[in-house]
Length: 104
Image 1 (tube, rainbow, N blue to C red):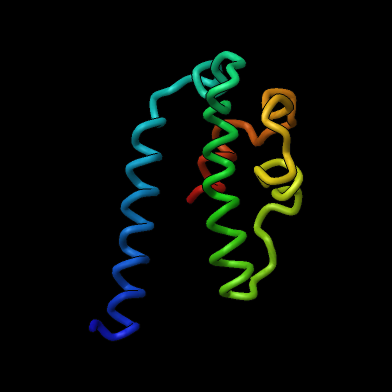
Image 2: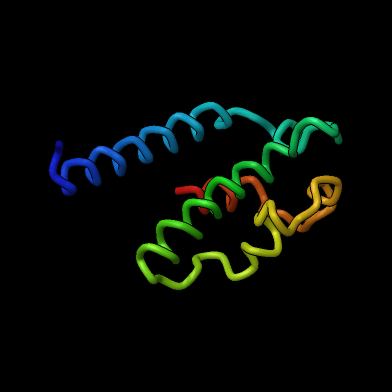
């Protein structure tokens, strides 16, 4: 069994790699492409980017690290348990550059 420090380092590296890959996938998309059409089976991509960042912030920084939130309104925008799917296109989401910076 690997020591906790090694496991934590591997998890951190996996998280960094996944975040970098996600950012690379959306790097050349326009604002319109990041919102996309209103569909029952998907969320706006710009919402998803913010949600991923919020999820990591919520569990890692806040709950595990005891740090205050980076984004004050994050819960109201990106908590999928509280934000109805149909309303995600109508929210005042972070603009493209701010959403990508939040994920960083």
